[in-house]
Image (cartoon, rainbow, N blue to C red; front, side):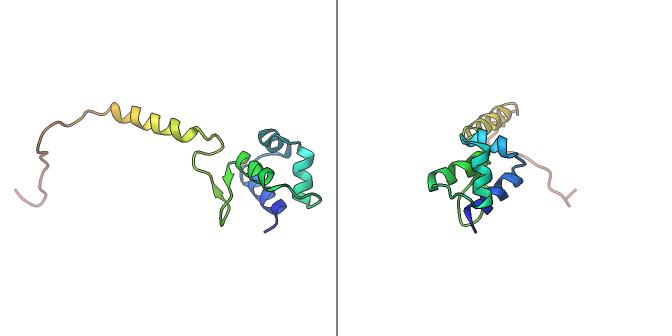
Length: 104
């Protein structure tokens, strides 16, 4: 698949305008449009930066990046999960008892 096609696919799947993607990737919307139309070819570094700005990573197939657009999101997710887990009471009993179904 061509670089321009992948950029367009990532932009559409991320629901971003040319301007939004350009701003997020640190490039102009006209450069993004030129890449998508095949008038220009991005360098590999630029190509990867644009895909990451759209929330994707380069691999054998186009897939969502872990943590989304913000690379720190994954760490924040972990902190939020741990804070939520701390709200639940801990069981300190050595043996947990549970009802056995089918017995009276």
